[in-house]
Amino acid sequence: MPLVFSQISHSYGATPVLHELDFAVEPGQITCLLGPSGGGKSTLLRLAAGLEKVQRGEIHVDNDVLANDGLHPPPEARPVGLMFQENALFPNMTVAENIAFGIRDLSRREQQEKVKELLELVGLDEYGQRYPHQLSGGQQQRIALVRSLAPEPKILLMDEPYASIDITLRRTLREAARRTIKEKGTTAILVTHDPDEAMEMADSIAVLDQGVIAQVGTPQEVFESPATVAVATLFGGSQRLAITAADEHGFDTAFGRIQAEAERLSSYRDAHTLVVRPKGLSLKKNEKSDVVISDLRYIGHDWLAFLTNNNTPSATEPLRVLIDDVSQYQLGDRVDLIANQTGVFLFK
Ligand SMILES: Nc1ncnc2c1ncn2[C@@H]1O[C@H](COP(=O)(O)OP(=O)(O)OP(=O)(O)O)[C@@H](O)[C@H]1O
Image (cartoon, rainbow, N blue to C red; front, side):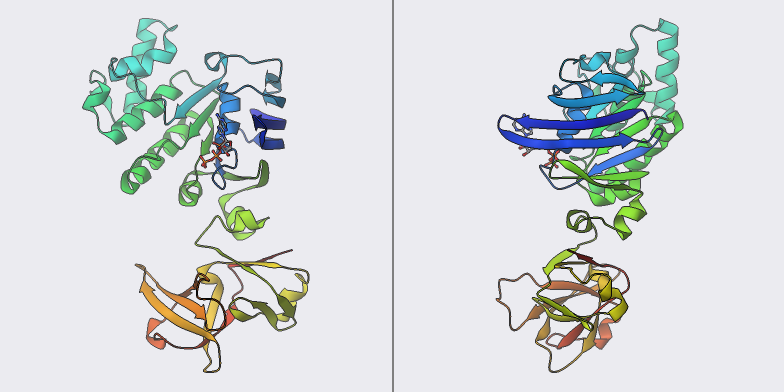
Protein backbone atom coordinates (compact mmCIF):
# COMPACT_ATOMS: atom_id res chain seq x y z
CA MET A 1 0.00 0.00 0.00
CA PRO A 2 1.47 3.38 -0.91
CA LEU A 3 -0.10 5.30 1.96
CA VAL A 4 -1.39 3.91 5.25
CA PHE A 5 -2.69 5.77 8.29
CA SER A 6 -2.60 3.61 11.44
CA GLN A 7 -4.28 4.47 14.67
CA ILE A 8 -4.08 8.20 14.03
CA SER A 9 -5.52 10.38 16.79
CA HIS A 10 -5.36 14.15 16.59
CA SER A 11 -6.59 17.05 18.72
CA TYR A 12 -6.47 20.81 18.42
CA GLY A 13 -5.93 21.91 22.01
CA ALA A 14 -8.52 20.01 24.02
CA THR A 15 -10.72 19.31 20.97
CA PRO A 16 -10.28 15.81 19.54
CA VAL A 17 -10.67 15.63 15.75
CA LEU A 18 -9.39 12.19 14.66
CA HIS A 19 -9.87 9.04 16.76
CA GLU A 20 -7.58 6.04 16.27
CA LEU A 21 -8.25 6.29 12.58
CA ASP A 22 -7.12 3.49 10.24
CA PHE A 23 -7.10 4.09 6.52
CA ALA A 24 -5.15 2.65 3.59
CA VAL A 25 -5.12 4.15 0.12
CA GLU A 26 -5.06 1.80 -2.87
CA PRO A 27 -2.12 2.25 -5.26
CA GLY A 28 -2.78 4.09 -8.51
CA GLN A 29 -6.30 5.03 -7.47
CA ILE A 30 -7.99 8.35 -6.94
CA THR A 31 -9.56 8.24 -3.50
CA CYS A 32 -12.00 10.98 -2.56
CA LEU A 33 -12.29 11.84 1.11
CA LEU A 34 -15.83 12.95 1.66
CA GLY A 35 -17.71 13.80 4.81
CA PRO A 36 -19.53 16.37 6.87
CA SER A 37 -17.86 19.72 7.42
CA GLY A 38 -15.43 19.72 10.33
CA GLY A 39 -15.03 15.93 10.20
CA GLY A 40 -11.23 16.12 9.96
CA LYS A 41 -10.63 15.58 6.22
CA SER A 42 -8.17 18.44 5.81
CA THR A 43 -6.43 17.49 9.05
CA LEU A 44 -5.76 13.99 7.71
CA LEU A 45 -4.26 15.40 4.52
CA ARG A 46 -2.18 17.98 6.41
CA LEU A 47 -0.74 15.20 8.58
CA ALA A 48 0.36 13.26 5.49
CA ALA A 49 1.71 16.43 3.87
CA GLY A 50 3.76 17.37 6.94
CA LEU A 51 1.84 20.60 7.56
CA GLU A 52 0.66 19.23 10.90
CA LYS A 53 2.65 17.08 13.36
CA VAL A 54 1.47 13.53 14.06
CA GLN A 55 0.47 13.31 17.73
CA ARG A 56 -0.49 9.64 17.94
CA GLY A 57 -0.29 6.78 15.48
CA GLU A 58 1.81 6.38 12.36
CA ILE A 59 1.72 7.14 8.66
CA HIS A 60 3.49 4.71 6.31
CA VAL A 61 4.48 5.03 2.68
CA ASP A 62 5.28 1.72 0.99
CA ASN A 63 5.82 0.03 4.36
CA ASP A 64 8.30 2.69 5.57
CA VAL A 65 7.36 4.99 8.41
CA LEU A 66 6.75 8.45 6.99
CA ALA A 67 5.73 10.18 10.21
CA ASN A 68 4.88 9.48 13.83
CA ASP A 69 5.09 11.37 17.13
CA GLY A 70 8.90 11.36 16.93
CA LEU A 71 9.37 11.69 13.18
CA HIS A 72 8.28 14.79 11.28
CA PRO A 73 10.08 15.30 7.98
CA PRO A 74 9.28 18.64 6.28
CA PRO A 75 6.81 18.64 3.37
CA GLU A 76 9.55 18.93 0.73
CA ALA A 77 11.27 15.78 2.05
CA ARG A 78 8.09 13.69 1.63
CA PRO A 79 7.16 11.71 -1.49
CA VAL A 80 3.94 13.67 -1.76
CA GLY A 81 2.73 16.40 -4.07
CA LEU A 82 0.40 19.02 -2.66
CA MET A 83 -2.39 20.84 -4.38
CA PHE A 84 -4.08 22.90 -1.75
CA GLN A 85 -6.20 25.96 -2.36
CA GLU A 86 -3.71 28.16 -0.54
CA ASN A 87 -0.79 26.89 -2.66
CA ALA A 88 -1.23 29.46 -5.41
CA LEU A 89 1.27 29.75 -8.25
CA PHE A 90 4.30 31.95 -7.57
CA PRO A 91 3.25 35.27 -9.15
CA ASN A 92 6.77 36.46 -9.97
CA MET A 93 7.71 33.31 -11.91
CA THR A 94 6.62 32.31 -15.40
CA VAL A 95 4.42 29.27 -15.88
CA ALA A 96 7.47 27.23 -16.97
CA GLU A 97 9.46 28.37 -13.91
CA ASN A 98 6.53 27.48 -11.66
CA ILE A 99 6.36 23.95 -13.06
CA ALA A 100 10.15 23.52 -12.89
CA PHE A 101 10.28 24.71 -9.26
CA GLY A 102 10.05 21.23 -7.77
CA ILE A 103 12.56 19.69 -10.19
CA ARG A 104 15.40 22.19 -9.81
CA ASP A 105 17.87 19.38 -9.18
CA LEU A 106 17.41 18.03 -12.72
CA SER A 107 19.60 19.26 -15.57
CA ARG A 108 18.33 22.29 -17.49
CA ARG A 109 17.48 20.13 -20.51
CA GLU A 110 15.59 17.60 -18.42
CA GLN A 111 13.65 20.41 -16.76
CA GLN A 112 12.70 21.88 -20.15
CA GLU A 113 11.58 18.52 -21.49
CA LYS A 114 9.49 17.84 -18.43
CA VAL A 115 7.85 21.28 -18.53
CA LYS A 116 7.03 20.81 -22.21
CA GLU A 117 5.54 17.35 -21.63
CA LEU A 118 3.39 18.56 -18.74
CA LEU A 119 2.18 21.67 -20.57
CA GLU A 120 1.11 19.45 -23.46
CA LEU A 121 -0.65 17.10 -21.08
CA VAL A 122 -3.00 19.90 -19.98
CA GLY A 123 -3.25 21.54 -23.41
CA LEU A 124 -1.30 24.68 -22.49
CA ASP A 125 1.81 24.21 -24.68
CA GLU A 126 1.89 27.87 -25.67
CA TYR A 127 1.70 29.31 -22.18
CA GLY A 128 5.14 28.54 -20.70
CA GLN A 129 6.43 32.11 -20.85
CA ARG A 130 3.34 33.78 -19.41
CA TYR A 131 2.99 34.88 -15.81
CA PRO A 132 0.17 33.51 -13.63
CA HIS A 133 -1.79 36.79 -13.76
CA GLN A 134 -1.95 36.42 -17.55
CA LEU A 135 -3.89 33.14 -17.21
CA SER A 136 -7.54 32.46 -16.46
CA GLY A 137 -8.47 30.83 -13.15
CA GLY A 138 -8.94 27.47 -14.84
CA GLN A 139 -5.63 27.66 -16.64
CA GLN A 140 -3.92 28.50 -13.34
CA GLN A 141 -5.49 25.42 -11.77
CA ARG A 142 -4.23 23.20 -14.57
CA ILE A 143 -0.72 24.62 -14.12
CA ALA A 144 -0.97 24.10 -10.35
CA LEU A 145 -1.89 20.47 -11.03
CA VAL A 146 1.07 19.75 -13.28
CA ARG A 147 3.40 21.73 -11.01
CA SER A 148 2.50 19.32 -8.21
CA LEU A 149 2.98 16.33 -10.55
CA ALA A 150 6.35 17.49 -11.96
CA PRO A 151 8.54 15.83 -9.28
CA GLU A 152 6.55 12.62 -9.95
CA PRO A 153 5.34 12.23 -6.38
CA LYS A 154 4.15 8.78 -5.35
CA ILE A 155 1.13 10.41 -3.81
CA LEU A 156 -0.76 13.53 -4.74
CA LEU A 157 -2.79 15.23 -2.00
CA MET A 158 -5.50 17.62 -3.17
CA ASP A 159 -7.56 19.66 -0.74
CA GLU A 160 -10.65 21.21 -2.31
CA PRO A 161 -8.65 22.40 -5.30
CA TYR A 162 -11.73 23.55 -7.20
CA ALA A 163 -13.69 25.10 -4.35
CA SER A 164 -13.50 28.65 -5.70
CA ILE A 165 -14.16 27.76 -9.33
CA ASP A 166 -17.52 27.94 -11.09
CA ILE A 167 -19.39 24.70 -11.71
CA THR A 168 -18.92 24.42 -15.50
CA LEU A 169 -15.19 25.01 -15.38
CA ARG A 170 -14.91 22.74 -12.36
CA ARG A 171 -16.26 19.85 -14.41
CA THR A 172 -13.71 20.45 -17.17
CA LEU A 173 -10.89 20.69 -14.63
CA ARG A 174 -11.95 17.49 -12.90
CA GLU A 175 -11.78 15.65 -16.18
CA ALA A 176 -8.37 17.13 -16.99
CA ALA A 177 -7.14 16.24 -13.50
CA ARG A 178 -8.46 12.69 -13.62
CA ARG A 179 -6.96 12.06 -17.04
CA THR A 180 -3.60 13.55 -16.06
CA ILE A 181 -3.37 11.68 -12.75
CA LYS A 182 -4.33 8.39 -14.41
CA GLU A 183 -1.87 8.92 -17.24
CA LYS A 184 0.91 9.35 -14.68
CA GLY A 185 -0.29 6.42 -12.56
CA THR A 186 -0.18 8.61 -9.46
CA THR A 187 -1.98 7.64 -6.26
CA ALA A 188 -4.17 10.59 -5.32
CA ILE A 189 -6.33 11.66 -2.41
CA LEU A 190 -8.82 14.42 -3.05
CA VAL A 191 -10.66 16.11 -0.21
CA THR A 192 -14.01 17.47 -1.22
CA HIS A 193 -17.36 18.09 0.35
CA ASP A 194 -19.12 17.90 -2.96
CA PRO A 195 -20.56 14.36 -3.38
CA ASP A 196 -21.03 14.90 -7.14
CA GLU A 197 -17.36 15.73 -7.47
CA ALA A 198 -16.45 12.58 -5.52
CA MET A 199 -18.71 10.42 -7.70
CA GLU A 200 -17.20 11.80 -10.89
CA MET A 201 -13.56 11.77 -9.85
CA ALA A 202 -13.12 8.82 -7.54
CA ASP A 203 -12.14 5.21 -8.02
CA SER A 204 -12.79 4.88 -4.33
CA ILE A 205 -14.70 7.05 -1.85
CA ALA A 206 -13.78 7.17 1.84
CA VAL A 207 -16.26 8.85 4.14
CA LEU A 208 -14.75 10.52 7.19
CA ASP A 209 -17.27 11.21 9.92
CA GLN A 210 -16.67 12.20 13.52
CA GLY A 211 -12.96 11.42 13.36
CA VAL A 212 -13.15 7.91 11.91
CA ILE A 213 -13.55 6.37 8.47
CA ALA A 214 -17.21 5.37 8.29
CA GLN A 215 -16.97 3.54 4.95
CA VAL A 216 -14.62 2.96 2.03
CA GLY A 217 -15.89 1.64 -1.29
CA THR A 218 -16.43 2.32 -4.96
CA PRO A 219 -18.78 5.23 -5.69
CA GLN A 220 -21.50 2.68 -6.48
CA GLU A 221 -21.02 0.73 -3.22
CA VAL A 222 -21.05 3.84 -1.08
CA PHE A 223 -24.07 5.28 -2.89
CA GLU A 224 -26.14 2.10 -3.03
CA SER A 225 -25.19 0.45 0.26
CA PRO A 226 -24.32 3.19 2.73
CA ALA A 227 -22.95 1.75 5.98
CA THR A 228 -24.10 4.54 8.29
CA VAL A 229 -26.68 7.31 8.48
CA ALA A 230 -23.94 9.87 7.85
CA VAL A 231 -22.88 8.11 4.63
CA ALA A 232 -26.48 7.72 3.45
CA THR A 233 -27.29 11.40 4.01
CA LEU A 234 -24.31 12.62 1.98
CA PHE A 235 -25.87 11.82 -1.36
CA GLY A 236 -28.76 12.73 -3.57
CA GLY A 237 -30.85 15.08 -1.42
CA SER A 238 -31.29 12.37 1.24
CA GLN A 239 -33.69 13.08 4.07
CA ARG A 240 -33.52 11.61 7.53
CA LEU A 241 -36.65 10.61 9.44
CA ALA A 242 -37.14 8.97 12.82
CA ILE A 243 -39.15 5.74 12.83
CA THR A 244 -41.66 5.87 15.66
CA ALA A 245 -43.25 2.44 15.11
CA ALA A 246 -43.05 -0.44 12.66
CA ASP A 247 -45.07 -3.54 11.80
CA GLU A 248 -45.31 -5.97 8.91
CA HIS A 249 -46.92 -3.38 6.62
CA GLY A 250 -44.57 -0.46 7.05
CA PHE A 251 -43.25 2.13 9.45
CA ASP A 252 -44.54 5.32 11.04
CA THR A 253 -42.69 8.61 10.67
CA ALA A 254 -43.41 12.34 10.96
CA PHE A 255 -45.02 11.92 7.52
CA GLY A 256 -47.31 9.19 8.72
CA ARG A 257 -47.12 5.63 7.57
CA ILE A 258 -44.67 4.61 4.85
CA GLN A 259 -45.80 1.32 3.36
CA ALA A 260 -43.09 -1.25 2.73
CA GLU A 261 -42.90 -4.89 1.77
CA ALA A 262 -42.89 -7.30 4.70
CA GLU A 263 -39.74 -9.16 3.64
CA ARG A 264 -37.86 -5.90 3.54
CA LEU A 265 -39.03 -4.91 7.00
CA SER A 266 -38.18 -8.19 8.67
CA SER A 267 -34.47 -7.69 8.03
CA TYR A 268 -34.62 -4.28 9.70
CA ARG A 269 -36.78 -5.09 12.69
CA ASP A 270 -34.89 -2.78 15.04
CA ALA A 271 -34.56 0.18 12.70
CA HIS A 272 -35.03 3.58 14.29
CA THR A 273 -33.82 5.84 11.52
CA LEU A 274 -34.94 6.05 7.94
CA VAL A 275 -32.91 7.80 5.26
CA VAL A 276 -34.86 8.38 2.11
CA ARG A 277 -33.83 9.84 -1.22
CA PRO A 278 -36.35 11.72 -3.38
CA LYS A 279 -36.38 8.67 -5.70
CA GLY A 280 -36.97 6.29 -2.80
CA LEU A 281 -40.72 6.84 -2.43
CA SER A 282 -43.79 6.53 -4.62
CA LEU A 283 -47.08 8.31 -4.06
CA LYS A 284 -50.61 6.90 -4.13
CA LYS A 285 -53.60 9.19 -3.87
CA ASN A 286 -55.75 8.70 -0.80
CA GLU A 287 -58.33 11.31 0.19
CA LYS A 288 -58.14 10.26 3.81
CA SER A 289 -54.38 10.80 4.12
CA ASP A 290 -52.98 13.64 6.23
CA VAL A 291 -50.02 14.02 3.88
CA VAL A 292 -50.60 16.78 1.36
CA ILE A 293 -48.73 17.95 -1.75
CA SER A 294 -47.94 21.51 -0.73
CA ASP A 295 -45.69 22.37 -3.64
CA LEU A 296 -44.70 20.97 -7.03
CA ARG A 297 -41.45 22.16 -8.57
CA TYR A 298 -39.80 21.47 -11.87
CA ILE A 299 -36.08 20.72 -11.41
CA GLY A 300 -34.94 20.31 -15.00
CA HIS A 301 -35.47 16.66 -15.90
CA ASP A 302 -37.99 15.77 -13.19
CA TRP A 303 -40.64 17.14 -10.89
CA LEU A 304 -40.33 17.22 -7.13
CA ALA A 305 -43.39 17.06 -4.91
CA PHE A 306 -43.03 18.75 -1.51
CA LEU A 307 -45.14 16.97 1.07
CA THR A 308 -46.38 18.26 4.38
CA ASN A 309 -48.29 16.47 7.07
CA ASN A 310 -51.38 18.21 8.46
CA ASN A 311 -50.69 16.59 11.83
CA THR A 312 -47.10 17.70 12.31
CA PRO A 313 -45.80 21.16 13.22
CA SER A 314 -45.46 23.49 10.24
CA ALA A 315 -41.78 23.95 11.12
CA THR A 316 -41.05 20.40 9.94
CA GLU A 317 -39.21 20.55 6.63
CA PRO A 318 -41.32 19.22 3.74
CA LEU A 319 -40.48 15.75 2.43
CA ARG A 320 -39.25 15.84 -1.16
CA VAL A 321 -40.37 13.05 -3.47
CA LEU A 322 -39.55 12.71 -7.16
CA ILE A 323 -42.58 12.05 -9.34
CA ASP A 324 -42.65 10.50 -12.80
CA ASP A 325 -45.88 11.86 -14.17
CA VAL A 326 -46.71 15.31 -12.91
CA SER A 327 -50.00 15.35 -14.85
CA GLN A 328 -51.37 12.86 -12.29
CA TYR A 329 -50.98 15.28 -9.37
CA GLN A 330 -51.91 18.76 -8.29
CA LEU A 331 -51.41 20.96 -5.28
CA GLY A 332 -53.53 19.89 -2.33
CA ASP A 333 -53.68 16.23 -3.35
CA ARG A 334 -53.60 13.88 -0.36
CA VAL A 335 -51.27 10.94 -0.75
CA ASP A 336 -49.97 7.75 0.86
CA LEU A 337 -46.25 7.00 0.76
CA ILE A 338 -44.82 3.72 -0.48
CA ALA A 339 -41.17 2.71 -0.11
CA ASN A 340 -39.45 1.78 -3.39
CA GLN A 341 -36.91 -1.03 -3.73
CA THR A 342 -34.03 1.46 -3.86
CA GLY A 343 -33.36 4.81 -2.28
CA VAL A 344 -34.70 3.86 1.15
CA PHE A 345 -32.27 2.92 3.92
CA LEU A 346 -33.04 1.77 7.44
CA PHE A 347 -30.62 2.04 10.35
CA LYS A 348 -30.72 0.98 13.98
N1 LIG B 1 -5.42 24.89 13.23
C1 LIG B 1 -6.52 24.58 13.91
N2 LIG B 1 -6.68 24.95 15.19
C2 LIG B 1 -7.79 24.63 15.89
N3 LIG B 1 -8.81 23.90 15.39
C3 LIG B 1 -8.71 23.50 14.11
C4 LIG B 1 -7.57 23.81 13.30
N4 LIG B 1 -7.75 23.27 12.09
C5 LIG B 1 -8.95 22.65 12.12
N5 LIG B 1 -9.53 22.78 13.34
C6 LIG B 1 -10.82 22.19 13.75
O1 LIG B 1 -10.74 20.79 13.61
C7 LIG B 1 -11.94 20.24 13.06
C8 LIG B 1 -11.63 19.49 11.76
O2 LIG B 1 -11.20 20.41 10.79
P1 LIG B 1 -10.84 19.98 9.30
O3 LIG B 1 -10.48 21.22 8.55
O4 LIG B 1 -9.84 18.89 9.34
O5 LIG B 1 -12.24 19.38 8.82
P2 LIG B 1 -12.79 19.14 7.35
O6 LIG B 1 -13.47 17.81 7.40
O7 LIG B 1 -11.71 19.32 6.35
O8 LIG B 1 -13.87 20.28 7.24
P3 LIG B 1 -14.44 21.11 5.95
O9 LIG B 1 -15.18 20.12 5.12
O10 LIG B 1 -15.35 22.11 6.57
O11 LIG B 1 -13.25 21.72 5.25
C9 LIG B 1 -12.88 21.43 12.88
O12 LIG B 1 -13.74 21.46 13.99
C10 LIG B 1 -11.95 22.64 12.87
O13 LIG B 1 -12.61 23.76 13.40
